[in-house]
Image 1 (cartoon, rainbow, N blue to C red):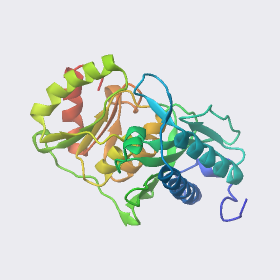
Image 2: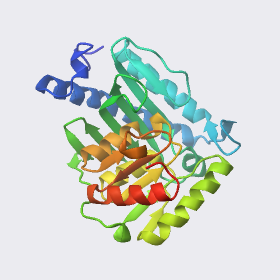
Image 3: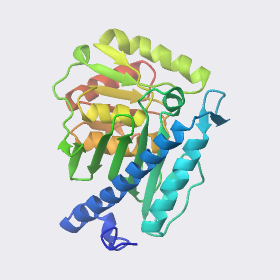
Image 4: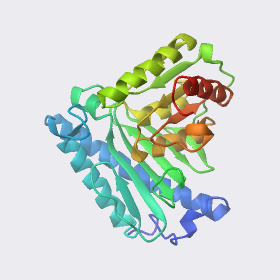
Length: 290
């Protein structure tokens, strides 16, 4: 491993409060960004040769392509070349237990249906977290979301702010729900989608409008960039939101889950700070445990 890519002690990288911790988080982010960019180039090239469904997962519409699997394999290889003792949690393969207290949480292609159909809203999402692979107990140190179709690179390190293509990101502030553009997404389960549609019937009349982009990582980054005022979704896995949630937080958004706690599979909510409590209450009344 090259010295610039990680002469960082196992636990030095886990303390994000002090100067050394901030530097370690920035170094982890630099590595994550280089890997994500390489993975994005690989996925674009692979897609140019054609893409088809390789398998289904939780339902017939929950798909995986060979490019998903190959891209994750590439990311895992690049991570382990630089950080052989870290853990890895990914969408397409089994979790790898490490010894450093750091886990790489990766979604090789977030927005696989968009990727399959040629819709330019899919992303490579990579986060580095300290501690458990459970979002309720981890501390996110670095996160990067790359949209290979647009070339946009969203990134953040804990305490270091959020950036888009090197420029600072700031989430919108002082937004009332009546003027809020709200993003959401839907499950692959028909029954859960029916329930989500019922929630949407409550939210839609109260908001400016609703958007459904098809990539949770990019939706969270849209909150960070002020392109959305809020985003909520039920049923997200840790790799869907690990990087995007940190980017939104570092851009000034508030991110949480049920009962004001951490984001979980039950609910991920990101919003302008002044809007968060208002939309959380609406979601709670509609049946989501916000």
